[in-house]
Length: 354
Ligand code: PHE
Image (tube, rainbow, N blue to C red):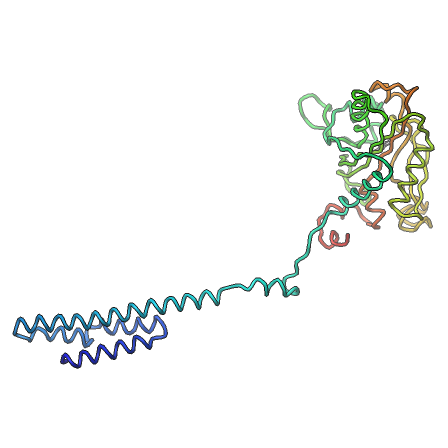
């Protein structure tokens, strides 16, 4: 190939390089350029036949110049093409997040919310705050003294059978336990009030309690109570009944009422169970209330003088009442939840109803 033809070849290749749309095309051009039968290599091979050394060297330089021109054109175009290809791949991989979020059907976003028991607890707190109570909390791990003994339930007292207790194994047997009710807070608050000379007291104490119960439609081994404690001068059983009725109407609605039935608790005297109109049948009588029209919500009574004694309060000067009832039971009655176990199963189809 003459020098002129070689220049034509270079021009052709460079034009081809410029037209390449894809780096694959450049690979093909490059391997043709490097192939043994390429015009440039053929020209180089032909150099051997040139006898004049000066001429041969000059020719060699030009052939090298042609080869370099082709290599440089390929490299430059390759750089351009890879930039373009990278852009294109980025554009095709990009996710349009706004499009996903706006097509609610394919990706619904739902807000979470508080559990129905937490909401119930908050509403109950609101009711008691409106009645002039202060909200307090207390420890879930208690000693036997606070949970039982100071509440007039000495070791071996038969009423302890009402509370299937979870004990903590901390060395000495059966002294530390998970509280079985919120009543130990009566003792803590009375002790505190004695120490600070801060009687009278009007407190509501919500919190978690524990009993070794097998879960069923109306019981959970971990449940919630609200304790009420009022200590003042001249407090009567009538005040207790009035507070319970006011709370019942405020939380459950004006057509739901309360009634008190004689009961026994070692830490109150007299004691009562309080019941409310069955919210399922509105008092007509149904399976849930065993046809009585009433549902038991908790216990209550006048503070037993033995409890005042245990903390050093003069029972001739002060009197008071206490009550305790289940928050989970309130949620169950208010929302007609047939089986309480649903509260802890974390089934979203259940949780989303409230
Ligand atoms: N603590 C009792 C219970 O859980 C309820 C109660 C509280 C009774 C306050 C009387 C006074 O069974």
